[in-house]
View 1 (cartoon, helix red, strand yellow):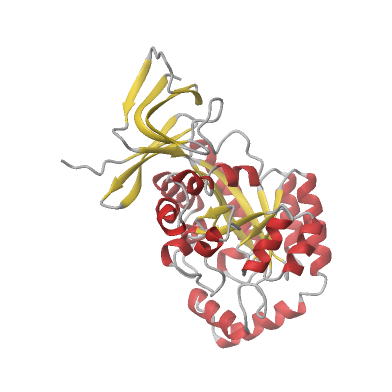
View 2 (tube, one colour):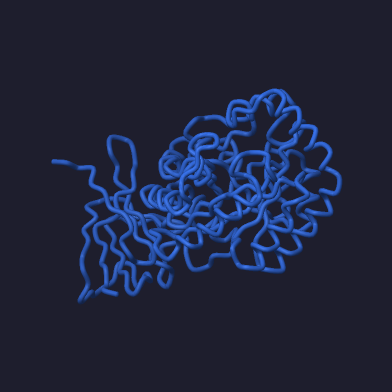
Length: 384
């Protein structure tokens, strides 16, 4: 692979920003920062753009919408994976964990057989992919039929991150039954009769959930798969899941839950769309408040990959933090949360996953994206 020499950039390192700096890439690896001498390298003049590490997204369920853009309307899985791959490259996301829900037959593509098929399709597409596509399996704990499917995915190496979630009304994301019914009716076009049946079944299947959770977490840890908990709403719940081996708290509902997660050494994740919108879609803790309270370790795309890059560049003004502090939320912190030690920071010896960021009338966009030293995406916004 030829050498690539990126010059005249504002390079964001882990703890500082270097101005008018350069980065040398060789064989897909960062070989030097501000090298004294460079030979036989193709120069790319970034003309004052900001150079950041490729972003690492631990939770994005947008692939489900690529597969099923409307209820019961399905695209071929290779087509859907290709579209999601391109969207992430254009967004500056170089490592994405596609969040796939395993919830029996509850919600369209979120049934077990279909979700497993999508997981395998992600792996089938990866040899042709622009970015590093990985699989995050989300287990709805009231489903007694999913563990067999999930264990098979673990054994075959088709899972990179595992999380447990409970969308039963009255706790977590849905504070009451009305909120739960409204969400399903709006998002999945469920009738009242279908909602009644679903709620009854969910209540009946809650028995035995803890044993299933313990079995799956133990198995995941045995395969070296990091484990997350979704929508933790009390310190007690955080303590419980942490004792089971959970190391990541996704979307803690309130400050007390987030603080407890941090106190136990867990990584916390909040949604970047929440930053742009200024609120949670379910009335939970604002991501911006979490950043200000220093209880946010990571930001994720949640459902909108394009929101990540815009959110982090707005955070210095919104939260009073440095750009390097903001960038860590989508790079080195998520890398550490899942044990990816080869990426997430611009440093010698790390993977050359890099994003050149253009500033356009106050809006930032990825203009060039390299994954493992290979140009994966490029766009021009100056049409002069």
